[in-house]
Image 1: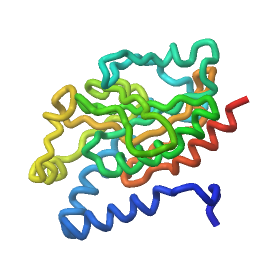
Image 2: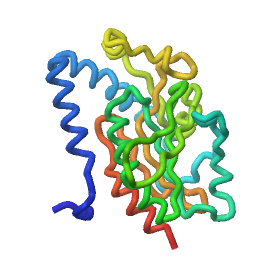
Image 3: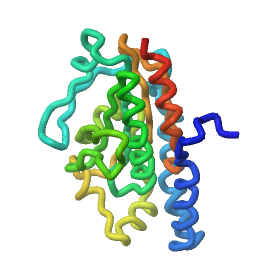
Length: 229
């Protein structure tokens, strides 16, 4: 039995379905090179780090440009108890189907987050990502911040670079991250989701080197509800 309400739409089946379709399209050998060439280096990067941020840590403060040419500042959103919590999501880019499935799932909980007085932002190294929107009636889009060179992701201990085999496979499919990323490199964030409370401390963290895995948005909503008093 699901731990979430009966009306909740889970993203795990969609993530698994996309993996199956990718393997069917590329074949097992290419798929394994693509998966392993990203997951392996991400595991190594996490294992080698001493600065990965987790529950109980004070979130690194940061300011980043938005896709609409504004500036989003963490300190401003924490000031004066404006929000009960902030949800910060690091994602690889709009080219990543797994990220898009997750972001669409987050759109579905927008009204729940609003009811919990929580703000949601997404952070990507992509040069010009669009703010996330879609046909969901659940609420408005949320801002996407441009993390040039993955500098903020680095402060959270999340950056890595895939191996050459994976890069070449993606290039052969027409995807060149040197052109899409703001700094012209292949540096990516390991997907991470953090819930930050009013005091600036992290109360929930989900970081997984396997980019095919993401937390259920309903879990994020439940955490934010618990912080809204």
